[in-house]
Length: 81
Image 1 (cartoon, rainbow, N blue to C red):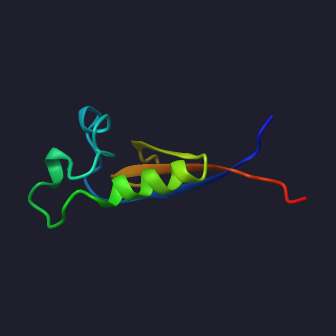
Image 2: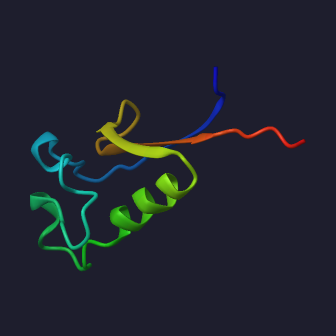
Image 3: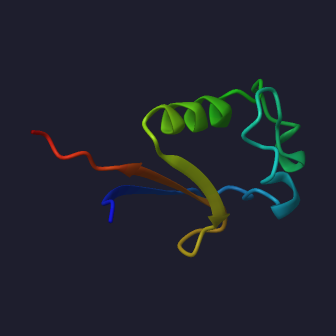
């Protein structure tokens, strides 16, 4: 039974379409609704890689607080000895 630290980030943007959520964590991939904004499509790929390096993960959902997306980061809690 592992314990996890959960970080929930909500934004008030346009969100991430469900169809884009499958590939949006790949390097240089940007959601269709964000093509008109600046960027290279690396931020979420880097965030996912960092979470995985720490045996965690990151997922995207529709925000229940704002109009945009919720990014949920789960990292395992390791007890120090």
